[in-house]
Image 1 (cartoon, rainbow, N blue to C red):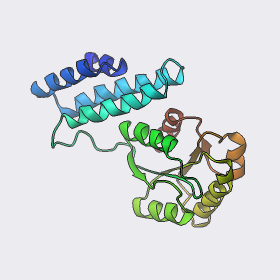
Image 2: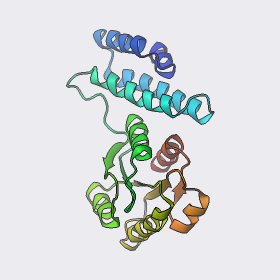
Image 3: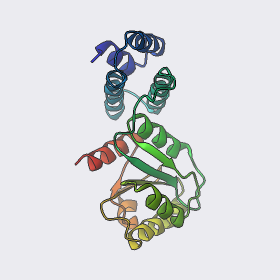
Image 4: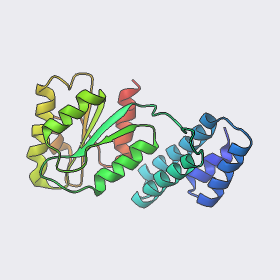
Length: 206
């Protein structure tokens, strides 16, 4: 593995990283090896974020830089999703998308295929998406305390439909905490996108 790529990714040195990736492509380095180095660097970014050394801005920049590196491969697909599909949406009655979009970027850049339903998503739409994608992880986001009831209704609807078995329902958002987790009946609560990714990754790789 190219540790120079790992370090440049972890340090968010964009121009240096793009140069290193282009050099590796020119040298016919297998795409999967380049991606592995990029993902190792992303993992370091995630750890630094968890430790408080990086912030949301760095986390988003890392996801953006990773995507730009993938674009350097041209028509060749850089990587297939390695963790399956993640269904994501802001629950009914809430139209906030900033937190959801951060989750989308972090999960996608770390190996999930994203099925983003947008905002103000009714329970039926989540159920339809789960059936169509057979996703093993579902993420519900909200920023309004008034949307807690919609979050609970969505979790209840997923369970009543029989689709909760073998799946993980994660909730998150500014006002969401352990008490909301207990109220909603979801499986897990994530305080931020990176923690959510770790929870989801561990679930699908058990």
